[in-house]
Length: 146
Ligand code: RB5
Image 1 (cartoon, rainbow, N blue to C red):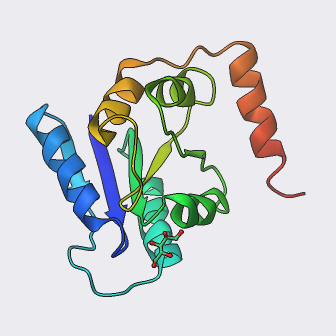
Image 2 (cartoon, rainbow, N blue to C red):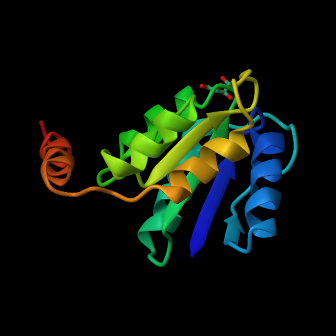
């Protein structure tokens, strides 16, 4: 399973932790940067990640900024993207089971109740349920041109 990751300067350290965690679990991670604290604009990293994802071959993407908020908003502006911002393992599980998220966003400056690695693991352990949840996901994308 191929997973991509991208971060701004507020999220790169957390990205590096999660990339190492997932590589340790045997996943194939593509790290799109950034890799230092020099100030960059999170919409640029969201664009880089989504354009790479659209190239194909990725199961999902991980985005990181200071809060996860800006980079998730930016990604969700791009057609076909369902970027979730989970804070608990339940939210991470539901992001896949109900919303079939294709991106997760996290904040490098956020104090989470559990390690972010546990949130990513909860997402990975879940399966999209389809059915009425799949229909609702289709309705999300029907909103894109409104
Ligand atoms: C950058 O300072 C910060 O605004 C960014 O990382 C993110 O938190 C925005 O939502």
